[in-house]
Amino acid sequence: MACAYDARVSDVQFKVTVPGGTLAGARGGRGDPLLVLHGGPGLSDYSAMFADELIGWDALRYTQRGVDPSATVGPFTVGQHVSDAVAVLDQHGIGTAVVLGHSWGGYLGMQLAAAAAGRVRALVLVDTLGAVGDGGFAAFAEELTARTSSQTLARLAGLDGLAIASADAAALESLRLSWPSYFADPSVAPAPPDGLRMSRACYASTFESISAAQATDMLPALLAQFSGPVEIVAGGASPFPDDVAKSTGALFRDAQVSVIDDAGHFPWVERPGCVAAALRRIAARLAACDRSS
Image (cartoon, rainbow, N blue to C red; front, side):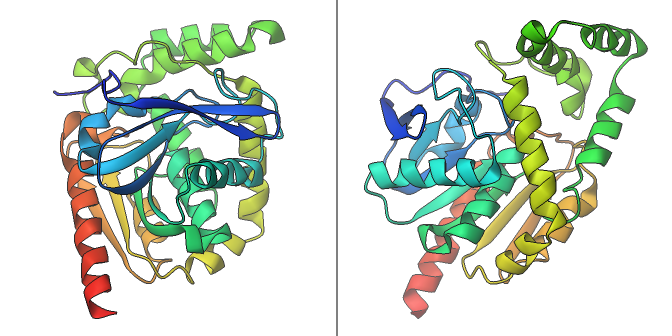
């Protein structure tokens, strides 16, 4: 099971000025621009996990607002996260980019495409939070609990009683305890990446904003107008139900859904190359569009 946890030596570190501070990130590789949005929300950038999948692209990765070394102040809203992503593109002089998002990052990518379609050439959504209803979040949480041993559930329950001052540490420990259940075979799940950080406040406030956004049903209507190609990669053994990827893909004019058998929420870990393959398909589809225009 291959997993690249270390940033590439050739990556160039950057800081982008945004309201409330800066966003810290890294840019590396050669090719067309690729904006990478990690999951969470309220989690530090773990996209070095799939750095090997990004070969052939000029990839920009950054820690989203809420977690050090990026700005730790809010507002923690979908709209602010979208504005931050646009700022990353603007301050690098990138007009349009392919956007790759994992989990919540996929949802953020869809919101970016809805709010600023002219900045997004195409979308690659990896085991994404969906755009219909609650995005499959409740079912995801239920399945994650079902996969977790009674001993671990007892330890998780004990974290609930920690003081507010320890909320971030408790949230991170909760993630570490639940981590194996994100994979198709928890018994061989790799350890979480070193250095992960969490902000409970960012997580909670951003999900409140997601719930408010989903209650309006505006996102599906806006995504129906997005004309770029879309690749959705779903883990066949992910805690997300199968219909999340399918219902989200059905919203777009030109989406292809690939279900990766025997892979969980981080499908590239258990099936290396699946994200790279989706990026190759996007490149081919964009080239075909360019030839026909």
